[in-house]
Every structure is written in C-alpha cells, then in structure tokens.
Image 1 (cartoon, rainbow, N blue to C red):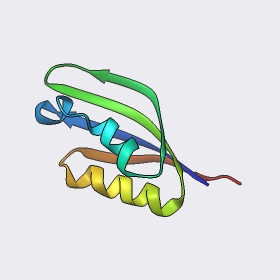
Image 2: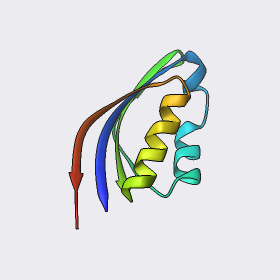
Image 3: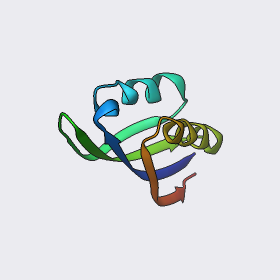
Image 4: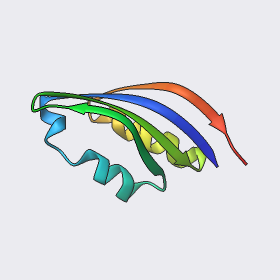
Length: 79
C-alpha cells in the first residue's frame, strides 16, 4: 500500500461539487482529510490518500482534470 499527502485548491465551481464523495466512490483509495478550509467561493484541503499506487495515480489524475490545483506534499510506501 502506498500513501500520498496532497494539497487540493478548489475554486467557486468546485466547492459546490461533491468531489470528495466521488473520489472515495470511484477510486480504490482511502481518503483522510487532515486539514481543510472551505468557504462559498474558495477552499483548500490537505488530504492523505492511501491505497494501491495505480489507484492513487488515477485519483490524482482525475482531480487534476477537474481544473482543481493538486500538489503532492509527501510520498511514502508502506508495507
């Protein structure tokens, strides 16, 4: 299992969407919200994604296609 910490920045259009629900539902990753600050027109989240490397890559790629800014903070591979 791999673990990746990412920062996600979302604009007005994205904070009204259920993108976290979709992330958990469509990809085989465990999502842990470490920190977040979400308002009506802007939000940022610090997420920890855990799961198979391929699924984390797919989930991160999907987030990037939505137009949100995604930045990897830390990568670690666990047993």
